Length: 167
Image (cartoon, rainbow, N blue to C red):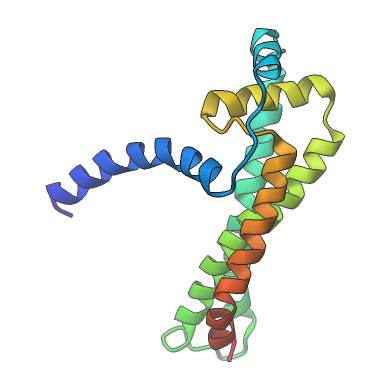
């Protein structure tokens, strides 16, 4: 790769990461967390083990997509008798990538709902604090509803591609 590729990637990615939450808030007209909740959440002291719980939460969501990709792209072709990796293997890779993103959206939403419902109120405040700190200061139940919309729209939009790949 050339210097230009690294330069443009290094210049654009941080800018996009900062602008994506603001764009998503504007596109989906998301209601922000109110000032009282922001002050209450940021003034609290949280135990250190909440970081482990938050990291576990994120790892579960991210690993779900990779598990789906591995299953579709590696396990399914290996189970076919006399499968030719040179011919139709690209279909499995494409299906794996499409469903990996879908698993991040739909599966991540389901995991968010489960983890949010079993969490204590103090841990929920910690999650709100982390969201505010990361720039996505929208409450989790609203994020869950929005992720459902995005995930269903994603699969509706890509259903013709999935149909062609499965033929």
